[in-house]
Length: 120
Image 1 (cartoon, helix red, strand yellow):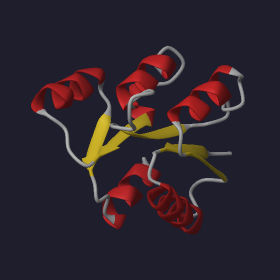
Image 2 (cartoon, helix red, strand yellow; image 1 turned 180 degrees about the horizontal axis):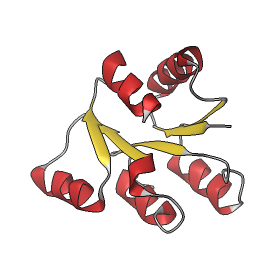
Image 3 (cartoon, rainbow, N blue to C red; image 1 turned 135 degrees about the vertical axis):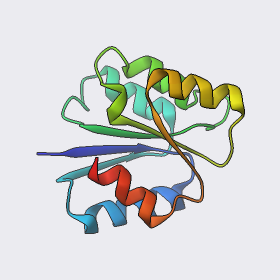
Image 4 (spheres, rainbow, N blue to C red; image 1 turned 90 degrees about the horizontal axis):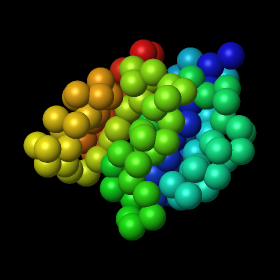
C-alpha cells in the first residue's frame, strides 16, 4: 500500500493535488493537512507511519515551515521520499534542500511535475 501526505496552507492547492493523486492511481491513500501543526501532531502521535511520500509547502506562516517539517521526520524518512513546493525560494534555501537530497518544485505545480512526484 502506498500513501502520500500533502501539507500546505492553501486549501485549494490541497484539494487539487489530492484529486490528481487519487485519479493518478499510484497511491491507495492521500492525507492532506492545511496546518503544519496538525501534521506535526498526527505525525508525533504515530498516525502517519504508513506514509511513503511527503510533499510540504515551504512557507506556511509563522508556526512551522517545510524545513521544520523535514527536520521533524528526517530520522525516519528517506530524503528521496520528501518533496518541497513553494511559490518562491532563495538560493540559500535551494542549497539546503539540495544538500539534504530533497526534491523541490516551484508553484504553480504543473500536472507534469506532480506526476513526477507521484511516480517516484
